[in-house]
Image 1 (tube, helix red, strand yellow):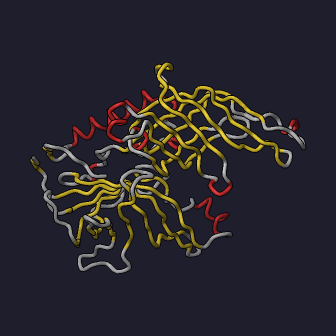
Image 2 (cartoon, rainbow, N blue to C red; image 1 turned 90 degrees about the vertical axis):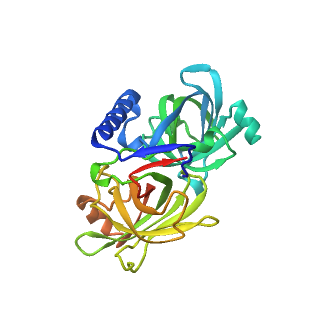
Image 3 (tube, rainbow, N blue to C red; image 1 turned 120 degrees about the vertical axis):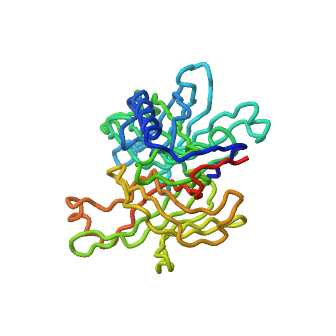
Length: 363
């Protein structure tokens, strides 16, 4: 995601300021409260943008094979702090081909955005990446944006949380008989919309880069592990890079099969028309910020092509805000290896490119 500003003045982040930022994040998380289930919370580098509540929500179930099967859901959305403000709609239709899809949210645009974009609303579709619940309760979930339609409020959404309040549970299976009609079950839930920050989150001191952050991307892909008989060994890692989750494809990340002359093999490529490629090596050991995700890392650029801009060449890369990508734990591995010798694990990350100046003024 490009970072644009008319005037930018920067100095190297010192420890006291980093500590203050960390304390602010902790305070915000404490204020948010019940959403801070780590499984259902977006990675660092995303901020809560809109809180909406459902109105006239309904989930439709159909009787199939003696069980009630979820078919679709819909709701109007209002501002959670002022129910008189209508802000959009939610809709979902189940598809066996897209079982991870969780719905589409349409959010109204402001008058200024309508005039600029020509659309009264914009849309975001989400793919569920974390889930808590069972058939006896409306589930809580975290969805990652998978696509956007039209410019406006929803075009910047990176993650959506469903926080259930009441209802939505189908009747008991005993009422599902041949010839049963569809049932419409009211539900209430809050939807929290998050956007990707334009600046990276605070990082551990050993991952601090020297210079100005000039460009950031969201990546999602796979980590390849091979089981050697006793443990899982990471063999490769690939990802596609976007401006925001579900946004525009801008490049890719991969590991070169052969390192360059300076030992770099981690490669980021941004496509034309203003494309560039940088290859880098680890500048410090990875830091396990989230125990369920790949370590955050700092890289030093070792070779590049088309790496010049008015800001100067890219010299460092931070891979942060990771989610997922770890192999099974030792306890899980025994069961997994009976089925798979090779695993491809989904993961996501945010990458930030930095130039070398530790103190700068850009006009």
